[in-house]
Image (cartoon, rainbow, N blue to C red; front, side, top):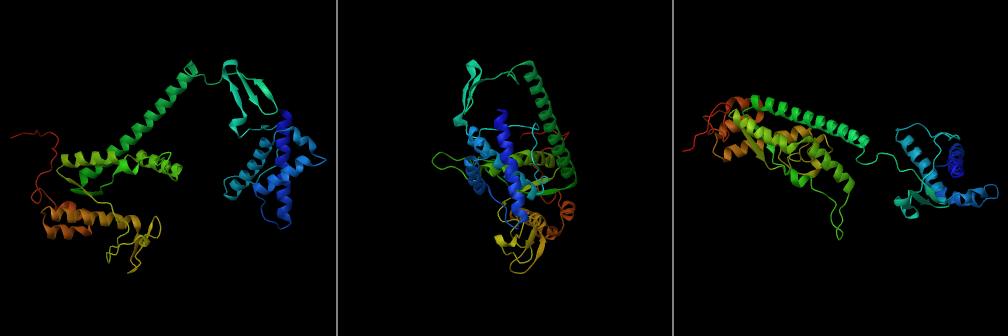
Length: 325
């Protein structure tokens, strides 16, 4: 096993030296496929025929490690790759699980060119005392994270509900937005990993819970929550009303392709949501003049809209009782 680790170290250092020589000569970066062809030549070379004693897959993994080190360096995530030294993190790995056989009953494992080896099965045994203590620590950590999120949502929703008479939001279908993209065997999904990350981010923010809290807290204070359709809110021009996907140049930049109106995309989306909310108020029989005049300022809307304009909210104020009749 020490010889195998040494062979992997040799291949890594030899390939790194080749990359440096090629760069100093003005050549381009040598990719993994080209290096793998060189590995075949090195294993058949007269001076390095001893490389054949080691399995080829771990040697290939050493070349992949070098390519990953260069990738991290180019992305400014790590320093320039350095030559490996004997005795420092010596290791090798088999990438193909089909080549490995595990006999848990007899605590042994089969590795290519090494045969059956005994191993000690004693690390993180499930349901041991150490395992239970580790599980308790993880549970406390997740409980603390959940409490922090709930505290933030409650404080934010309370501040908004106590300072605004009307709040307009997008009627987002969180359940559909955070659905799995795995698909089925017949029709597998696309970009499953990226969609999984997006789903986690959406659920971590607690959009549905935030809306639920806003709904009943605004009702407590005699205010109103208006949910409007979310379609094209960030793609509709505030100046001319033109709707186009190209209007949103990037995540933060909005520029109308017709009239040239420019603004932050989030600001455009927020003002369109507010405008649609005012239209919804008008359609429900509200004072049209006040609703239109209020589109320019959310603060002005909060001051102008009162119980005389719209019937009392469906919720109840704290301290009041509900009477059926």
